[in-house]
Length: 449
Image 1: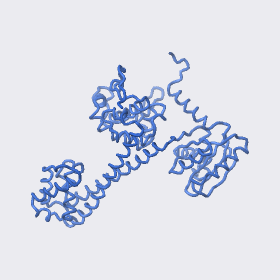
Image 2: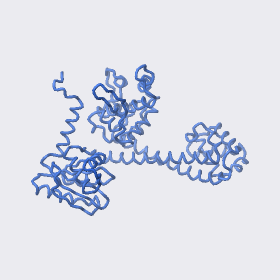
Image 3: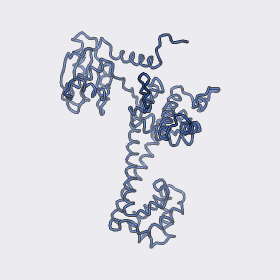
Image 4: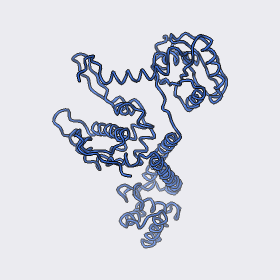
């Protein structure tokens, strides 16, 4: 069927989004712009021309703004409006409290991006003033222009996944920081230990041997060496078993024993440095246990949402990785298209076209950095385990025209993972390699019970 009006799919999606916003910000409603702070809340009531109808400062916490919303509703009614729409910036946690208070009063609630408020502040006048009074008016003005968005409706299950995902992200940062601290200390006082294994911090044997040195022998390398190789192997074996392993890698055990005799390193700081390594190592192991527990809880929430079978149907995407995705995005059904999800992650291309000029295309880099990071982490495993992604990567990096770099190709695959994750969840069908490679569906793969 032809498209005589020339309206594109993007135009239709934008029109639908504006229609949803207009339902929440009807012309019959006044706009309540609120600039949230810790103990001072600026509330303004405006019409759709940004004329201030009422203004009041409430010196209270965000969770006590119920009377402020009641006051704003009365001001809207007094000025001839049938209701009021509440708007604020989604900063910190206070906007969630305000959203709950507005929902309790059946008042529509929208959010304005702080970036848009900052740009509007610059266009206000040449002073670039930033005050609570002006910011509240700017929030109301942007809302009247429909330059706002509908915040994600979070139920109890999705909200729990959000919080677990935030905790996992923090634990990953803590784990990485602790590994870097241990590595830096060993490079200073005992660099030979880092050469005993190819990937020392991924080796249970290596970490067990390091624990024997810093805990049992108190960081005294000569004392550990005097015990002899046999007693050293037995000590490391007991430590590996204590941590849930079966048996150590003898090659690494013997390499660590040989490192005990290596004189390299700042000997004056060796005793204190290894003591500090022991303390950080204990913290790192505890962080690892907490991370494992958090990931177990996240996959349990995924099971509760009945999504595990769908997301793991994509080879290379684990239940933990998918849970990390969904902790950043929420329910994918709220995204009208898969491209909207890619834009949310900042992985969509940013075109630069004007007349006959064609500029260089780059990624937008906007959206949620946490979602972009989760997609980036998944690429490494999926690229090896998924033949579709592997073939795509090879094609992008070896084709004759417009050959991409490795990093650019991996960004393309990260966006593809997001699009296909959106497809399997919104359609309720398992991943199909034929469709993933732009083929035609011939059979429907039912979801396993």
